[in-house]
Amino acid sequence: MGNSSLVKQEFLRKWIRGFRKYSSQKKNMNMVERKKAIKLSADVAMASTRNETTRWSQALIANASRDGNNKVLTENILDSSSQHSEKLVRKNLMNLSPLCSKRVRSRKVLRRSRTMIHKSSKERLMTSSIAKRLKVQKRTRRLKNLLPGGEFMDDVSLVEETLDYIQSLRAQVEVMRCLVTASELFINPS
Image 1 (cartoon, rainbow, N blue to C red):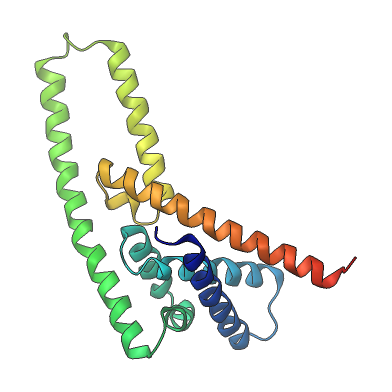
Image 2: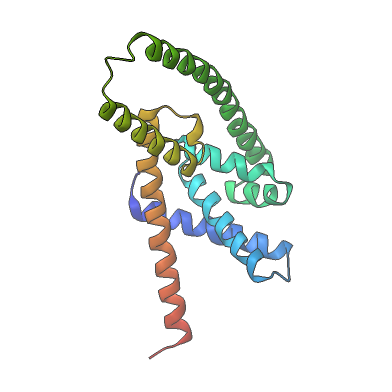
């Protein structure tokens, strides 16, 4: 994931810029809107620090920019000119579209192979191995639903992307903890 402290600094810079932009658009935010703004700006800031090197970051940026209200925030966090960020958003949306069609094809192949296995070797399969396989498939589906863009990934990519996403979330949590600690010290100097 690169130099951890540099990633955290870049994340913090982009996160604050994004949150300021969102706050300036909506002056009177309620608690739910503020929570959404913090989460959205943190997610987009972390995804943009990955420099489009991971599918989860591309999916997160693409999902955030689909909503008209979030598009301005996404463009602001993505940096520089809106023309550059517009290209980035379009590129991320286009990168996800071929993955969708792959998914449909693989479902058809999977269905066919399941029926072939079911018909030809039903007696040879042991129930414990079937149960283990079903358990792994269920957990894989659950993981694909948790990871942004995970539903379009194969199992190997899913594991690699999940590990990278976990590292990014840890860095995000560390930055947020430091920010809370600093604000507490500022508010309550002992």
